[in-house]
Length: 280
Image 1 (cartoon, rainbow, N blue to C red):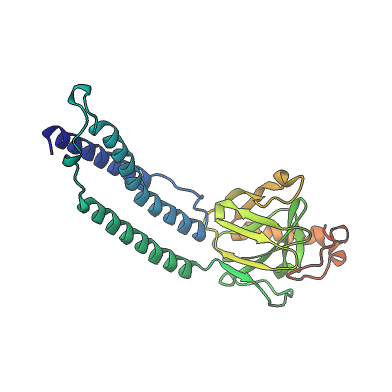
Image 2 (cartoon, rainbow, N blue to C red):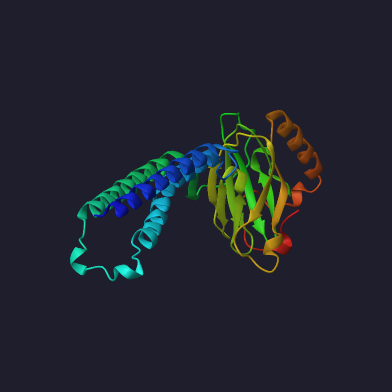
């Protein structure tokens, strides 16, 4: 190996190291999506950060290798072609690269499996019967039903008499058990800030559990193409509030819904698709 080639290798190795370290520091200290407004969103953010920190050095190494190949192997016109006899393979980089890839992939597989097993945000399709129930204690999950239909969401609170509202309001610090269903076509309930994304399928009850950790006003939207006005199926008024504010709000909703509550269908985890006869 010529001195010129060694110099190129050292230079590109140094550039790669600086870029890898600087990038990883920026990724580790900087914000990552989604907003960490729930336990689930924080877990997702941590996974994204870990993947980004691992991927950045690999990406920068690939770019550095391409740059070295383009510039480090240049031959001046007067030097002529390289003698094929001087080209030699080196198994050490190949072994190192393959070994590192195996270790990274297996480590991520183990981490991902453990994270999924510990989070368990989605309970899949529920077959349990639905009923109205007394207000839960702060330690019990608060059940909130998400009803999708073209082209909006409504929300029912079985804990509070089955009251139905067009606005989602939930208390901070309490486990929320979303029951997501649809009245017509397939939708998808996406509460980005909480890291919740659950398909809404007619005659199916999709259960998703999350604990909000930050108060605020957030956006919910449909993320499944559901017809002509799919792009307008969103709302920027979903709120995570304190327990006292939630108690005051739900009492207000119960009072407003009292005159029409008897006309609503009995609370159920699913409903027969019949939009003209349903809703507030």
